[in-house]
Length: 275
Ligand code: PEP
Ligand code: MN
Image (cartoon, rainbow, N blue to C red; front, top):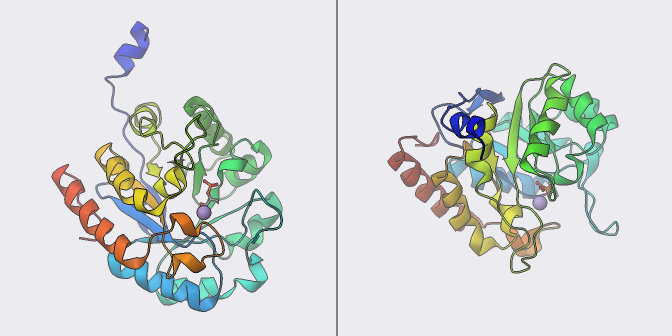
């Protein structure tokens, strides 16, 4: 570390509050975004909302377009077949975050969601980032699975330079030599990003570890390390999920995590939004 880095290490960058719907991230309270990996059907999404909301989640997640490694696997319902999602979110008065995989989806997806997610495979898709920079809705930018933290920060600049300053940075695990977990969740990303950027930092332990029983301990570790929010995959019946079932929490496990996260966050001087 050179002298400049050492002195800047002591400077606290004030986090900008970014709202998804009317839910503030990076402010006084810890927030949790939860929901299934994919929106699969009206009844699956309704049950997911009920289960996540009753435990305190403040924003919903749910993929409508899925970027799967295997082209034969479920690719998401697409806009036409997922229209019910917007009505359900309105009924329950909860904002929705969903992934955009192609600039051509922005207009139609923008009518359905309150925030756009950029997935790990698209962090380097600069034309997508620039187009999202011309929108008003917030963008949750996931770290590429092989991206340096500085590359994540530079990717966020592609959005900001076009005029959209509503960015949330998301650590979701990187690919390392370790095979025991799906990815390696890099918790050091939290203090580093908080020192270098004024955007809220969200941690996604679900993709970070890929194994449901390891999600809660890593979520709590992220809270302890200062994350502004968590992104958690929850499914009414994980064994039946069309994507990422192995890492999805059932409602009971999610409820316990939310209680533990609230206690831990309170100890650290930051109340949870759901308490
Ligand atoms: C997701 O959130 O379901 C997802 C596909 O995430 P990632 O891009 O981090 O793999
Ligand atoms: Mn997923």
